[in-house]
Image 1 (cartoon, rainbow, N blue to C red):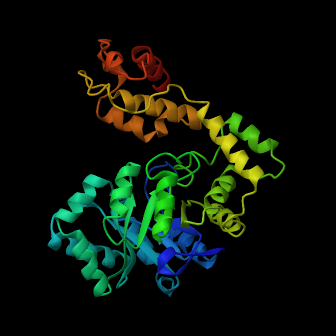
Image 2: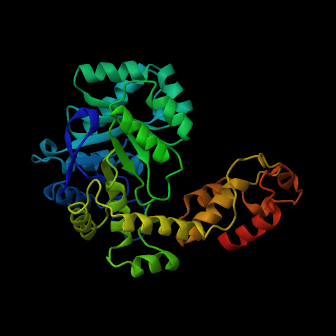
Image 3: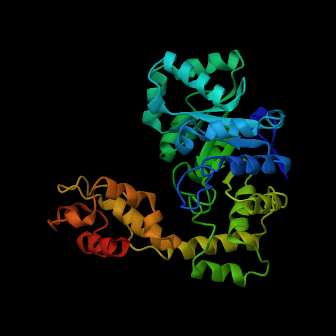
Length: 376
């Protein structure tokens, strides 16, 4: 296992961090945890050299922290650092923050949390956390030793990221990043800004929720033609670990074979390891994915709101995701949300108000009909 220094903190961590969000032992494919299997997987990762474990209060129906706490008995807690999170939706004042932290400490069976994150924030959520005194609470808990480092995980625009990361003295940040997200959310600019500030970065969605783990045919052809043979998973992690700003890359594993494969991969990666030819390969891979785009919707939302409740940009985003990553529509989270909120294209009355508002001059009505037919 390769280890890296966490920016200004100066501590060492395993490059591979085990994500504890997707433990799934149920044959039906739902989120039921096979507890003994999950504990075995966690301990297998630690025995292989993993020192960073990431969970959250809400993961797996609020049971992930419980399972992790059980796995870290018998001396395993002393060998690792734990990251968990405070969701904005669960707290409204200091008393509730105190109660939540105590609940999480209890579930994890520990007297301190190493990396405590404000969960999934954007500018709006950061302002909310400030309004309820969360920064002062985090500072106080750090002083008494209940947390070691004050951190945040992020989902928002680069401009929001730039504001948040410079608005307080953060110890660590967790962002979504992979070779397809270089211009999305915090993106490469955000990663480099964190590095400039000395703030270590932990990566989530390094394989885009598994979408980059299995390449569609036109992408696989590029991998197959390259002189050095590696899996899509290894290429994704290799590209990430080439970045000096990145301290940890999170990966969720459901099978012991996945743990073993990740341990092998993260024993071979490192900063500056990518050759110019390999960098070019990833650029070509990115272009090959983008070539599968169905519609050039930028998500600007000038077409919204639709008078009939159709989630136009959401439908186009799902259409592109399904095509780009060659996935079954039923596994697209965005499409599931559209259906749950009854915002499908079957409600389109073809009034064309969206087309009149679209700065890209897209044929939205035809696009919606085609998208909905393919997605459903």
